[in-house]
Each structure stands twice: as C-alpha cells, then as structure tokens.
Length: 218
Image (cartoon, rainbow, N blue to C red; front, top):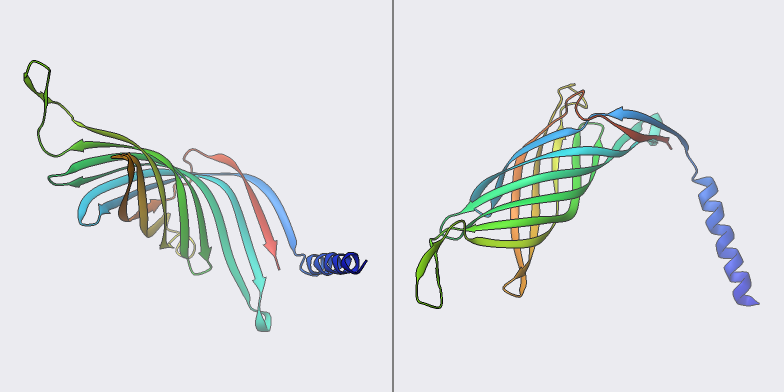
C-alpha cells in the first residue's frame, strides 16, 4: 500500500512538471536545400581530402526567454550526410573510404555551432609499396592495386561558424575530429584518428527535400 502511494505521488509530480514546462510550438513542413562540404582531411600528419553532401531531415528552432526580457535562440539541425574521404600515408597505404553519417548540429544566435556525427562506412586501402605474389611453382608476379577491404564505423565531433546566420553568406567554416574504426584488421580492430578543416556551402536550391521544422518558444 505504501509503495502504491509513493508510485502515485511520483507520477503526479512527473505529470505536473510536464504540464508546467509546456511550451508553445509550431510544426511546419517546407523544402530545404542540401549542403555541400569539402575539407582538408588529415590522418595525424598525413594529408588528404574529403567531400560530402548533407541532406536535411529535421530542424528545431528554439527560443528561450531569459532574464529581463532577453531571449536566447538555438537552431538544432539533423542531417543524413554521405561522404567520401582519402588520405595518403607514405610508405604504408592510401586509404579511400565512404561513409553515411547521422549528424546533429546545434547553432547559437551568433552563428557558432557544435556538432556530433556517427555512422557506418566502407574502406579500401592501397598498399604503398610494391607487392608480390608467389605461386606453387615459384613464379613471382606483381600484384596491381594491392590492398585490403574493411568495414568501417566513424564517430566524432566538431565546431564551426555559420556565416549565413548573421551575414547572409551561404558558407560555414568547420573543424572536426573523427575516429575511424576499421575491421577486421589482422583479425582485430584498427583505430585511426582523422581531422578535417573545411567549408560547408549552403546553396539556395540544391537537392531540395520536404523537411519538418518545429518552432518552439519557452
């Protein structure tokens, strides 16, 4: 009996908090353009390049009332991004990889943003040195485009500045740090850090999709 009363009291408190924390919201659907990305891609000190497309999925425009009538605006965006990357590690390999990622981006009123991303992918490495094979008869031959295929998982985060928020310039600068997890690698898992420094181009009319936008005022 005592447990039942405690449970009912907890549920009542929870419902009260939900009711008192309700905010005005408006949900709309409109066509949003996809973004293009290009960046200098580096695995430690080894140079490369990365390009991709960000497809918008969901947007939340949040406005909070704070002290003395001031407001705080936050834009939360969700994308599915398709990317291809490459870096060159002299004497070891060239790595060409493709990923599909879920990206969560949070932008403040001034235009500064943070983001987190993760997703699966595929990696193909090409060995940096000449590779030979020997058959059962002792014949030696050169293997062209020798390398390995791996499944890949990418996860990371970054920060940047969106010029379109204040200056109406359809560009954003960003820096990202990712961890590439490739497997199976010699019957185990291989971790590879990668860094990006690049730009996001936000064209007005490129692969436009119907996207849900939620406007919330608290």
